[in-house]
Length: 356
Image (cartoon, rainbow, N blue to C red; front, side):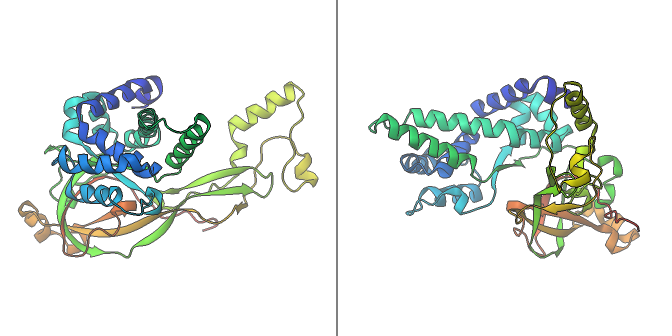
């Protein structure tokens, strides 16, 4: 997957564009997202009529209801005023049929492939779709006003809630399907699995910090830290300043060789005159936490008939599978519901505490 992502990103992009061209419902959903994010009033009524007339069954009932509410809102509220993230439903069965290379990458390396699609490919496709919609719009305004409006719409699209891919119509495959939580092994880490069960416990809906900007007290280096799934979505704060990495060290050597003046940052004094990589261990947070996401943890008990022999032989708590729901999925289920979970297997570790 690393070779596909680094050596041939255009190939993955071409596979995704081919998939969108052969499945109009997915391209239609992206058009709805762009229209709602940029608040293009002329396209809203058009999409509302298309939603009810030309694409019956193309979207799920929940997605169709959501986009209908956005398009028919009399106040024409922007998308980023309603939700924090938007789910983009991708039919995995159609993806495997229309774009086998991309479908195999999603099945084998779901975490890396979906992250690459969400951060790079889908954003570029949405921007291209916005430019196409702007070119098909009205040309009654003056050129300066039209350019200002186009720039405003592009800014709204960049600030809109990000799309999060949600896989639907998973094919029945023995390599992905698990009948009990006990069948999930350590070797399944990072793989896509499907399991059906009843929600035995449902935790409270929480808000966790997804990322934060911090600075080193010693050298003033600014960097971002992200929530680590393996540590219960706590911020992965480094033990030492990232400015002490090998890359920074090579940059300092190159600057010293070229006799460039190294900028001085931080609190001055000895550390302001100090050359070489920083080894600071104390950091300050810059500003308030602004990047939050919804978080909920549930416990799943297998309810299939094939799991009875496992449940009769092992304690009940061993048959409970912890499942983490993030963003738009958090708060959608309650205790007693029978659900089919399509997720990525991950590990969870205790957080390392200094001097303990």
